[in-house]
Image 1: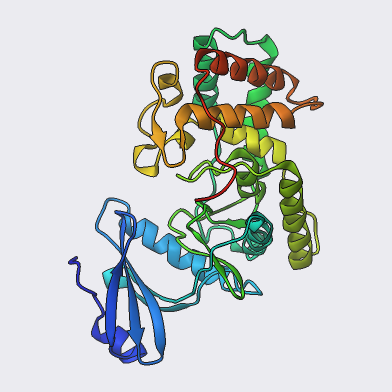
Image 2: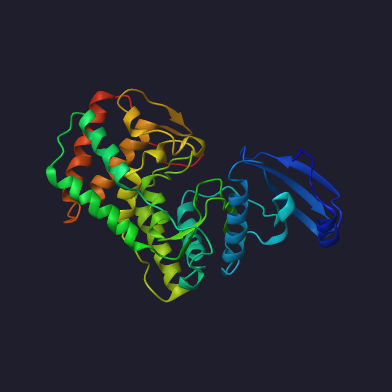
Length: 342
């Protein structure tokens, strides 16, 4: 596939001949253009060749069609698809710089996105997979490397946590990477883009992003508690309005699950390769707005606070507090993650 706009005869018959186009910045996994068509401006996205290109393309198409049920809209309209070219034509939306309380509107839109699917959609997208025993072992090995004593009950607590996350299941439409940059703040509300990693699971998995620090994203932020509470209230209110029920899942479990995952310390291309937690005692690295150690210190603090008074995760609460103290003592120059999005 070349770098010129691949707008074939089928698309021209359906949407008209492009009047002009401009290439936009995108990830290495795709090419994106802004295109002026006879009926208005659109965005063209083409998935580049790669071992998982067909799967990513199919995932995004399926997710956009499912999410189109949302009202008000939570995704751009899908105008056309060229399967042979792995190409999408999407509604063009104007993004406005979000305000300081942007996570409130974001959370409400995220709930409406999650609520677009239900049990009848099982199999329409891949099932979300959480942490497993490998993640538990890596996390406990990190604690030992930090010379922190691990109480005997912690391993059992973590096995139970992983079991709860696995059994939770759920049929919410998960974006897969709902990070700053994949949310467009438009005059008519927040819309989400880039659904290459979409899946079905528990909405708490992604509501947890606000507290745990956007674990799959280059842009980590940490909002103050009153703003987090407003955003989580907005999520629950929007979910109830869309479904007539309460959201499923436990937010503390979801945050603890993200803490265990070493892959949430690196960009997507480096995931599923090595034990990234094992590298923490020996080196640090920067990804986006924070270093790996800064991300981990933030997550340890979040889980420490959320597990206070939790009978199911009492041991983990003590362990996270001790690990955080050890990291800050070893590396006193670590900074808090940013409070504002870039």
